[in-house]
Length: 440
Image (cartoon, rainbow, N blue to C red):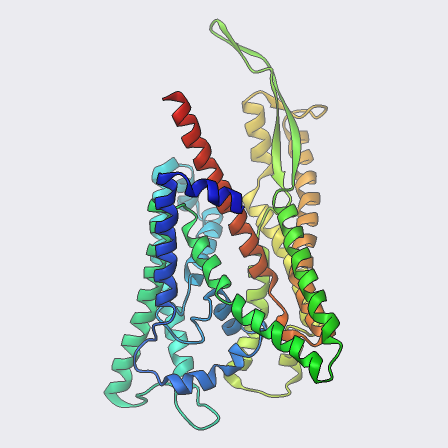
């Protein structure tokens, strides 16, 4: 990866794109530390200690704080992060399967994609407004242990004026982040939204390293088991990265044979090819779906502040019930996502229309059934892979007491996936320039 970046840096055009992308990341990080007005920062820091002092992902606030790079707990300009855009993209993607007009747009080529992109942006702003409003009411209704209110104004016209300003700033931050991601796609190295998400997660790594050092220091205070657990955690983290890297590029290739056909005086076809099916079909989306659903009870309890309630205790991220449900939901959503994204009947019909066949399988319904069976087996392997990646940190944290070091599987998969995609994009751009120079 570093060799690819070094080679790209030697090309003037790519160097400009890399510098532009770095500038956008700096702007993003500056916006992540600029607080919104009309909030008592000391009271906010005291109230958010519960989020910043734990890596428990059983509530949505901790999850949003991780994806925003800590901006959420500080109620900054980019506190909502890129989560509204991710949710909007997922919603529109699902609706494109359920609503015929949107489904027709997906088949209209570039013009259809632009219309879907415009709809996604509007939905992003709407979700940012809803999420920002909910966050404001959480800030308003939260009182610290010392009796302080986070919001400066809590009654009368001043309350409503400050509420409108705070919610609009949160919403504007969401729109600005979306625009920054599009600028990376336009003038940078591409993959803009993912790179901003990558930068936010990377920003949380210093806190993780600090926690790791604190656990190591505990070994000198009589807790000698941490001298063994800390290196084991590092080895486990590196093993997870290797496994994700291996699975990201894994695919099942279905052999395809195209029949010869004569068009005019020319003969076409006759070659062999393959239909690639990636093992990690859904990527990180099944984990996002599962963690979002399981975070609902923890989020409700965060507002109700019920201590020792057996129902909400079941949904703590280190409890056996949470881990079991997490495992089952990841597998279920992996199959759900594969079902809405891949249609074996349509794939078989496309092969038949192009005179393509799977060796040993008759065209039509037998081919569709064959592809369906392969998709089912591949989805199971990919779902088990995602479940292992997502659950190993939780199980390790529950077994060792290092709950603060339970780095979420979602974050690690995003980090590795974005890094691999960015390297591939740089390599493709370098290859394109190499061919261009050769042809010129």
